[in-house]
Amino acid sequence: MSRRDALAQNLAAVRERIARACEQAGRDPGEVTLVVVTKTHPASDVELLADLGVTDVGENRHPEAADKQAEVAASGASLRWHFVGGLQTNKAGAVARYADVVHSVDRAKLARSLDRGAEAAGRTLRVLVQVDFDTTDPGRAGVPPADVQALADVIVGECPHLELGGVMTVAPLGQDPEPSFAHLREISADLVRTVPSATTISAGMSEDFEVAIRHGATHVRVGRSVLGQRPVLQ
Ligand SMILES: *Cc1c(COP(=O)(O)O)cnc(C)c1O
View 1: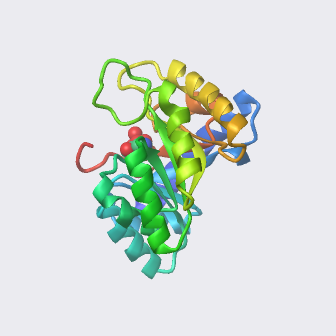
View 2: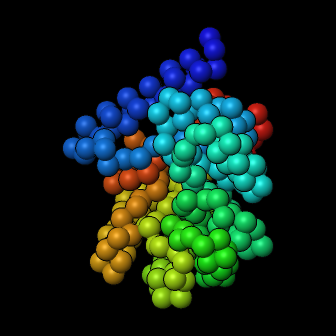
C-alpha cells in the first residue's frame, strides 16, 4: 500500500472514531478539530495529509517544526500549525513567527517572550494555557489548576500580541484520563466566564481522545493513530 493510501485509511478510521464519540456525547462533529501531530515524520507526510483534507497539524520541537513548515509552505499547501511541545523561552521568538497556535504556555515568562516574538513578526498569536493534573511528577509541563487564572491574567492583561484561546492538557501517564479531562472542562468553564473567547479545550491523543470528546474537547491531538509508530520514542 502506498503511504498516501495508508494515511487515507488511518485518517478515515480516526474520523470515524471522532464521529462515533461525538454521537455518543450528543455533540456535533463539527465542534471537534482534528490536529494531526506530525512530529518526527517528514514534510512529505504533511503534504499528503493536506491533500487528504487535513487542515491542522501539530509539532512539538523547534527547529524541526520550522523546517517542516517552510518546506510544506513552499509546496503550496496551506495549514494551521499548532505547537504542542515544551518550549524554552529562548526559542519562543522563532516559534512565534510560524506557529498559528501554541498549546503549551505554562509560565508568564514564556507568555511574555511569545508576545515579544509575535510583535516582532507583526502578528497575533493564539495561545492556550497548558494545565497539569499530575501531582506525582513535578517535572511535567503545565500549570497546576490553581494557577490557571493568574497566567490567563498575564496573557490577557500584559500580552497585547497574544490571544488567549483556552486550555490544554496531556493526561497523566499511566492513569485514567477521565478525572483530568473532567477537571479541565470545569477550568475551561471558569475561564470562559472571564474571557468569553477562550473556548478551546485541547485534550485527547491517540489512546484517549474519545474520553476527551466526552468531556468537551474542541481540539484532539492525534499522532500515531494517523501516522503509525514514530521512528523514535518521544
Ligand atoms: C505526540 C503528542 C501528541 C500525539 O500523541 P499520539 O499518542 O501519537 O496520538 C499529542 N499531544 C502532544 C502534546 C504530543 O506531544
